[in-house]
Each structure stands twice: as C-alpha cells, then as structure tokens.
Length: 326
Ligand code: ASP
Image (cartoon, rainbow, N blue to C red):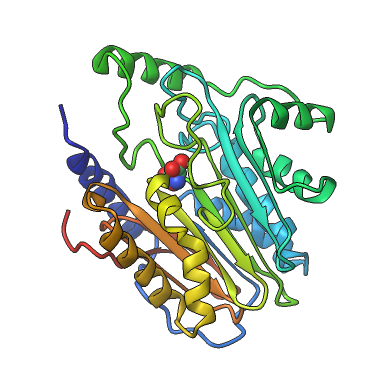
C-alpha cells in the first residue's frame, strides 16, 4: 500500500509542476499598504474561484458577496473532489458538506454535516442573515435549506462512487488515512474597495471520514476567522489539528498583536508542531490577510499553494513550509 507521505509527495509534485508551468511563483510578496480590492484562496481551485469573486470586487461590490460567489465555483464543479457536488463521500458512501462564512462586522453563519445541497456556503450565509444562530447541522440544516428554496440534489458523482467502492474493497473497512488527493477545502478571504473583509470556507471534508464526522471548516475560529479591525485567516488540511489549536482565531490574534500575516501563519503552524505529537503525518495550510490587504501563508509540508488576485496580479503562490522535505 502506498504510504500517505508518498501520496503527499506525488500530489505536491503535481502542484509544483502546475504552478511552474502556468503561473509565476513567489513565496512572499512585497506589497503596498492598502492593496485592495484583493482576494486570496486556498489551492489551485482558488484560481477560478478568485475570478468569480473578482467580478464582484471589481464592480465595487461587497466582499461578502464576493467570497460567496467565489467559493460557489468549486462547490458546483464535479471535477473538484473535495468540495460540494462531486465531493468525496464518507466511509458509508454519503457526501456530507461543511461550510461557514463571516464578514467584517463579525457576523457568522455555518452549516455542518449537510447532505444533498450543492451550495452549503449559501445556506451558511442564510443561517447568518435569517436566524439568531451561528451553526445548523445535519437534518436541521437540510430542513432549513429546503425551507428556504434550496433544491435537494444528488451530490455523489459516478466517478466518486466508483472510487469509494474501490476504496472500500481495498481497505475492507474504515480508514482515516488522508492525503492531498482527498482533502482540499477551499477557503477564501477578500477585501473590497471600501476596505471590508469577509471570508468563506467550504468542503466535503476528509475523504472516507467516519459517518458523522465534522471537521474544522464550518467552525468559526478553527477553519475560518475574520475580525474587521484586524484581518482574517482560513485553514485547510487535517481539520482535527486545526480544531485542537483554534488555528485561524490564533492567526488573527497574532496579527492583532502586531505580527505580519506570514509570521502569524508560521506561528500557528509551530503551535501545531508543539502540541500535536504526530503532526508530521499531516498537512495544514493557513492563509491570512490583514486589513491593509497584506497577505501571507504557511504550511506544515511542502506542497500547499494558494491563489491571489489583485488589480495587477493573478497568481498561484507556493506557501513556505515548516518541514523542508517530505
Ligand atoms: N479541513 C478539512 C477537513 O478536515 C479538509 C481539508 O481542508 O482538506 O474536513
């Protein structure tokens, strides 16, 4: 059986190839202050997502609308196997989705363990706007979505079903093994022309997770955190490590105390390395954006990249990593 680390190696080489062939790569950017509008998002599926967000930002729209529209692109794309329609199912063959959204005023909405709805991010936004709550889960989240006009859809594609059947046959039971092929949340942060920051995060979670498992992505302060006076951060990777260290809340607090987005992401990864004994077997990637529009990133393993879009830039950038080799 191929080990998880060699899976990561293969995945990251593929990503590295893509970023070198198609896009210029720069680990850290020298940016001007007040560099907005800007949108950044995790992994290479962030490129088309950023384009959709940019359409709204460039027409002087609100960053909340931009991040929602942005992440709806991978949610609807059946070829992206880690988000929305076409997402990898849990161990029982069911696709269950997690998502959250937050704006510059500190308003937040979230859904977890949501089945049959292609755009969990839009349901999360409605939870934020129409209810007194932050998070709805499972059956209640589905009923809320259906009651608000969302359609029940089949999210498991025939490709994902075959892959799941193969996994089941080979593994003969549950496995929580993860790798870059089966977990790649999209997390997005944007600042609009008025300087308002918002964030969104959406995922089908770890492939073949235990039924009922919820990761970091719908949890405010873990998968996503935004503070309009400071900035925002989003996470991708093994959610359990992010949840145990409240990763994105930590990144934002470190920025509040004066760290740059890159340094704050690095510190949050270091925290994981101190607190989680087997962190070397996992990938975590953080991206962060401060309220001036300066962004940064950091990850555990080489191979995490993220998409950046400004007036002058459309790029996929490689994040610096804590471990230098795989
Ligand atoms: N963070 C997600 C989860 O644990 C997966 C990922 O980002 O790859 O569900």
